[in-house]
Amino acid sequence: MRTLGVPGRSAVVLLAGALGVFGPLSASAQESSATAGQPWAPPPVSVGHPDDGNGQQSDIPYQKSKECVTRDLDNNIVLREKPWGQQYLQIEQAQKLAVSARGSAGGGMKVAVIDTGVTQHPYFRFPVQGGGDYVNAANQGLEDCDGHGTEVAGIIAANTPADTGFKGVAPDAQIVSIRQSSQNYSQPSQPSGSGGGGQTGGGSREQGQGAGNTHTLAQAVVRAANLGVNVINMSVDNCRPADGTINSGERELQAAIHYAVTVKDVVVVAAAGNTSESCKQNNQPDPNRPQSIVSPPWFADDVLSVAAIDETGGVASFSMNGPWVSVAAPGTKITSLDPSKGTSALANQVVEDGKLQDIQGTSFAAPYVAGVAALVRAQYPNLNARQVMHRIEATAQHPGAPGGRDNYIGFGVVNPVAALTAIVPSEEGITPARAEQLPSGLPPAAHKNWTPAAVALAGTGGGILVLLITLFVVHTIRRNRPAQ
Image 1 (cartoon, rainbow, N blue to C red):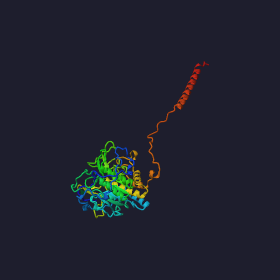
Image 2: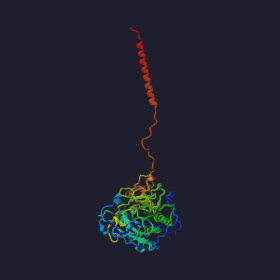
Image 3: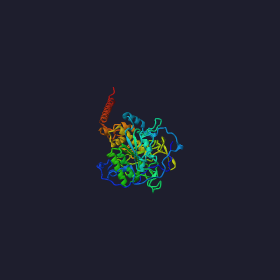
Image 4: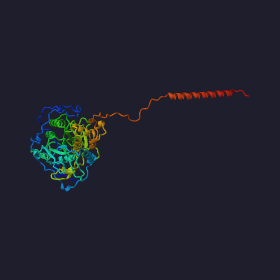
């Protein structure tokens, strides 16, 4: 067991979006939306994407308000076992297939982790590339005071020794870290722990207060796309009540994601979000009219939104439902890299609000899918971002629901082996199979033809009548015969 000694929450939240100046709508942003007409769908992209701010926050001088995470030496146990999620998804089998086909598991791929920063850990095959820092520009995304981003990055690309059970999904990929948020930083006038957002829900470490907003998240997405990454992972969410509107920060984020996918050909993966006191579960009577909106997942045309499952294979209790959910992956009892600076160990627990807790949340389901996206992109270099996203959805373990998806796990739990090996009809120019209504129960009874029965009964009746007449005649003759 390993814990992080950090006071309070190591959560990640995005506050209400900041205002920005937008350019004209690009031609690519005018494409029709696959979700158009749905009552839950966001409006079409209506602004140009923001600039990337040169990878740094210039408007708010954040200051460190908490010390960075440290290793709890009182719970310093070496972790050797394989995490259940890694076994459930058959990650090692998928990696063997990838190595057999391409010589590596995600080699040549760059995955941007837009999060709380990533610590340089010896278990990354390639040094983490600093891509930008919207909290403290001097650190270039290579400081992780919260511990969240390093754990996310470890699930994607940790390349651990052979005697260690835990391994990242795409261990030959390189991580590009962009720090966009942190709970250990705050504004000079903002006391530690104050600000918007709500209490952390059962998933933990997803929502709270601190540095970061939807404006900087949009900038970070553009920054990652301009750096030429192949996949973006965002385990950060902004949750608010659904009121039929879209605010300026959300418009920027929508445009930035659309730019990344459509113009820069990047696969964008995002956590579906955790429930909390301020982020109510979408369990309203009409599933297509959610009571809570979560972004980036809301922008479903351009995002692979990932829900969390637990060890039973069912959706985790804290995982946000919604019509935008794409797929699901393990999100409980997580093992990943120790984010503490200067260590070469693993982590499977954290201290939050003074309590020892397992690492869990949709934050850690998303990087499983980001890692699979890196494997698929390396295996099928001719597929564009949308085709990769479609392949991951098409090969998931579909739930028993109309259309093969529901609002809990989307198109189902991601299936890495199938994603690397299956034939997807649309990629081969094959007309997709169509569902047909099959008869249920026994076939209806055939129309009864009574003619044979009537003939048989008539013949039988006629024979009996002839017999009776014959017997009657014989009897009469015998009675009337004169005595001899």
